[in-house]
Image (tube, rainbow, N blue to C red; front, side, top):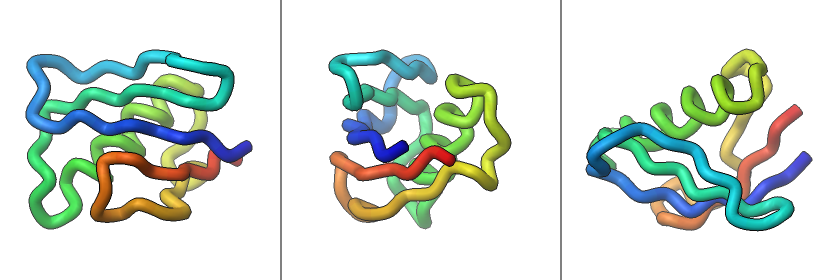
Length: 72
């Protein structure tokens, strides 16, 4: 399943929120430095979907706030 994710970094709390059918808002405390925010997004989505981190990968938007993510 492919989902669209809007990421807000440097947030007060870590949170995954469903916006639309295939669109999510992910807030993370991490800063977008050296890919730390991307790793945090993967960890938060893995916890949200109750799947291992290895089944979640970023397809596009590595350096963007809007990402397309594959959840297997």
